[in-house]
Image (cartoon, rainbow, N blue to C red; front, side, top):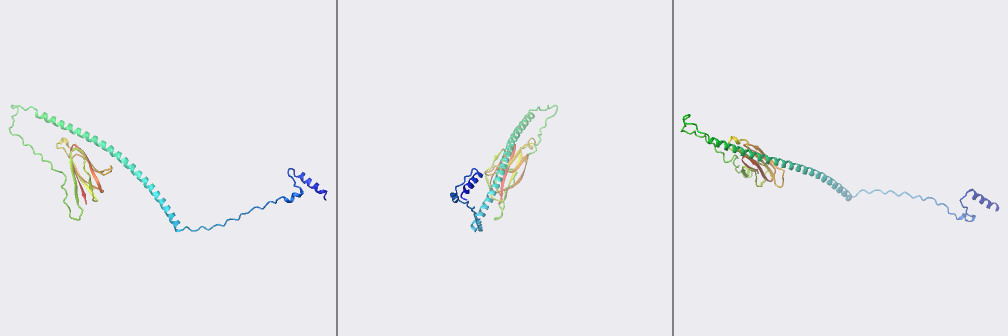
Length: 266
C-alpha cells in the first residue's frame, strides 16, 4: 500500500493540469470554506402618531402655502388692474388731445363768424339811402324790441340747511367761466354727491349750438375721472355721483358761458 500512494497522487496531478496538489502533510492545513452569514431582518418599528405640536406645525405650513397661493393670485389680479388702468390712461389722454383740438377749431370758427357779422354790419351801415323822390323818409323810427336780459345764474339757488340730525344737500363750491379751468379740491363726506351744471351759447342766432362744455371729476392722486357732462350748445342738468374722498373738477369749454356747483349729501 505504501508503494501505491505516490502513484495515486501522480495520477491525480496529471488528471487536473494547472492545479497544484499540496503534499500529504499539508492537507490538514487547508482552511474550510465558511458558510454564508445570514443577517436577520430588522424588526419594523411601529410609527408613533404625530403629536399635537407636529399637527400644529403641519397645519401652519399648509396655511402658509394657501396664503402664498392667494397672494400670487392677488398679484396677478393687481397686475391685470394696473394694465387696464394704463390702457384707460392712454385712452383718456388721446381723448383729451382730440378734445383740445376740437375746442381750438370751435374757437377759430366762432372768431370767423364774429368777423363775418362785423363785416355784414359795416356794409349795412354804409348802404346808400334811397332818394327822396323815390320814397320819402319817415321821421318815425321803429321801436326796437327789447331783448330780455339773461339771468344772473342758470343754476338753482343753494339748498337751505336741513333739520338738525338729518342728512341734506350742502353746496360746497360754485365755479363759472368761458374757457377751460380746474376747480379747487373739495372733500366729499356723504354717501353720494352731485354736480349741477349749465352751458349757454353766445347771444345771436349765428352762435347757436357753437359752444362746448366737458366736465370731469378727478379723485386726488388718481387720473381715472368720473364723467360729469359732454354738452354741445345751450343746456344744463344735474349729475349724481358716489364715492367719498377729495376731488376736483376739470372743465374744458369754448364758445360760451358755463357754470357748475358741487353739492354733498350728508
